[in-house]
Length: 108
Image (cartoon, rainbow, N blue to C red; front, side, top):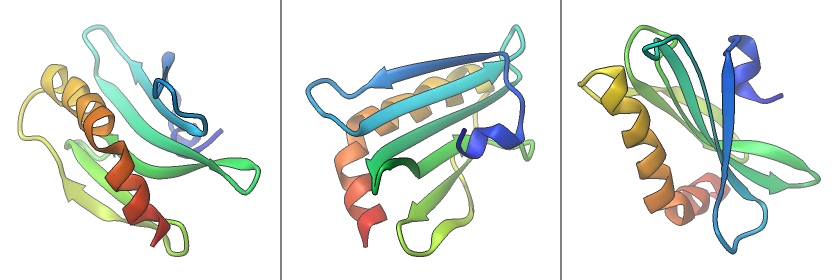
């Protein structure tokens, strides 16, 4: 599994990008109400799924990691100031709305 494998989650959901092969949003979470989460934008390249962007709260804050195809994972950046119940859907929506530009940035 990809980056979320370092942390164990109770549930995982995959959201395909309609009409697009090789791009997927995957989110995993634990707790009721949700305490921990990770939201990934995955791209299928070179015969494997690769992370292009990750949003999570495993450091105790809502943050994102940009990835680049050549340099890998970048340092964490603050993402959302609100509660987990708002940050998780905001991360999913951000990926739905911006996946094309995120992948273009990842490819550089």
